[in-house]
Amino acid sequence: MRVLIAPDCFSGTLSAPDAAAAIAAGWRSAAPDDELTLAPLSDGGPGFVDVVHTALGGDLLAVIVTGPLGDPVPATVLLTPDGTAYLESAQACGLHLVPADRRDPTRTSTVGVGELIAAALDAGARSLVVGLGGSGTNDGGAGALAALGAQPAELLRSGGEALSGLETLDLCAARARLAGIDLRLASDVDSPLLGLRGASAIFGPQKGATADAVQRLDAALEHFARAAQPGVGLNMSGSLAIAAGAGAAGGLGYGLLLLGGTRVPGIATVLELTGLAEVAGRVDVVVTGEGCFDWQSLQGKVVSGVAELSMQVARPLVLLAGQVEVGRREMAALGVESVYSVAEHAGSAEAAMAAPAEQLASLAARVARGWSRR
Image 1 (cartoon, rainbow, N blue to C red):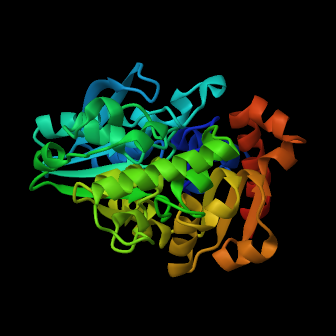
Image 2: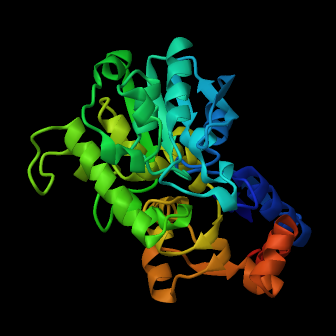
């Protein structure tokens, strides 16, 4: 049997390459004669640069940028021969960079993302693809704009809540810095910046925002959006704040849309770059995976992209997830034939988290024993 193993990362435990390796190890232990192809994936969030580098090659430029709390953090720019630079916002403002006891998206900043963009431009990039996802910020991209020359820089660098005190906004220098540059935003969500489906309401709580903080952040981002685009209607009609993807990465999508960026679906971008459709058409079964199979999985994440691809090439899709929170009806509608839970296999979520690679491999071996005989 020919098997394509194409998982996302298992957030907080395994990177996508590590997850793919664990699934492959388990599968081989039960079905050593099967032919396995490993293709770890990303939807624009953590692991985006590594996945694209594996697919395209190119040169990796190591840089030090400002993290979400103001501390220096390492990051990487991938430069390909055609003059395109691939960046990963999570490397500069990711939630994993913020200790659990310091998570406060009213204060964290995306300034490091702007520094990453500046480093890519200084290296000669003529087009940029910025992966958006996995952020620990909620500043509407204000920090990134400041790093590229927007004023008042000090206030813009101070986090989302500080934007409520913004009186004037000058984007001229930042826009000039990106003039003539093809800027694409590879995001895993299509949320707008504001409102009940916006950055603050949907993703703020998982970054540490209280209910009160969510309200303050949404109001601050609306104030910021009105300063960025004066004259928009009371319902923000005509504003980029209501554009699909403006709410990605705590509103970083909005900040980069202000600089002329174009939002593209993250997983579709990665699937195209990796040429996975051709690979999937040559196998007998596709195996994917992620940390938690929930409602977000159905909306632009790796699993939804791989499911669509599997249906296009008429191959069954098997999902291994740390935890499963989606019912059979939603699973079937997505095109997933079978779902297996690592937590259930291990006996508890705690047991699965304690030895993630080993438990994932053990589950993969169990799945292989059933599927390899079909």
